[in-house]
Length: 443
Image (cartoon, rainbow, N blue to C red; front, side, top):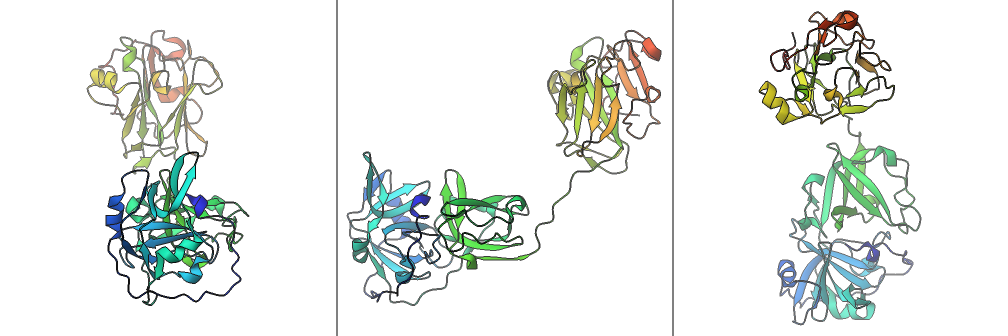
């Protein structure tokens, strides 16, 4: 929906309601659904004597709507809605919410913008045609108030995740929503500016609320609780938006959503095996082990590689998608296919070449929890592993079975390390994949 027609300058509301005559003779000759089916493309002029019956759902009383009427086809469970562009202010005095109106369509123009169907006058800009505001003098020729009493509307209750184009230009209600924490203490809108605020539910689905900086409530502060909001649904690009008629459309009186905490720290997770096979670099991998009795999610955990003697992180793995079963392992490899062809099963995570899982045996690895704390270390950061007690080139580094916790300081006594040199207490025993390795089966 083009919000330029909706959120404009604030109208003058200081005059009495007009004497509005109702019409008891008109009857609908076309449904909203059939009217939409007439539309093909561009802008079309309706040339037949058609009458549309609709229910008014918007109100410009508080200034958040401007020169527009939003109508839907039924008070309950509407099948859709339409937007009528009008060059007139204070429409709420003539067409209050819940009023039934009859719209004589002959001579009006029908168009569609961002999945929003519109009727009104014709607007031309640089040769481009679009639906524009119906002149105020023509309003009495096309829009007639029914003599029926105002009807009570029942907004459609919908979840943010279930919103569809069918709900556009209809009155909808969202339950259990709240404004983003970072927007609390902000006003509904900046003065004289169209302003977006963000609603979310407890599943983290979001919906934009669009407010006019000319509305009567623009400087009211957003509520800091959770609750219910009702408004007219619109669409901008691919995103759905909501416009409220007044602050009475909000009822925020419940506690905010409880934030689910999935980040944790534990030294029960540690590096259990590193591989750099002598016969193929395609068999490299890193194995992590969970020594605890509970499954542990690695949300926001990282594994860092310090290449050779670097003191800055050379590459990093985000472990957020992984969960380690109790007394279980996860295996991380550069390539799913290469690992599978060598070891006969798929690793838990593929991370590419030059990653922490692709070390050639003289690098240092650091396991970091979500809070930046170092949980486990292999090697000494800043110290090239070649010829040291943390070199596993062409070999293997495996954690001893008695180790049950990570160690933020490298301790050679916790490891059995083989390589092609046998320096500094390591074993000179180049290893061959797959037989020399035990990925996924830490003892």
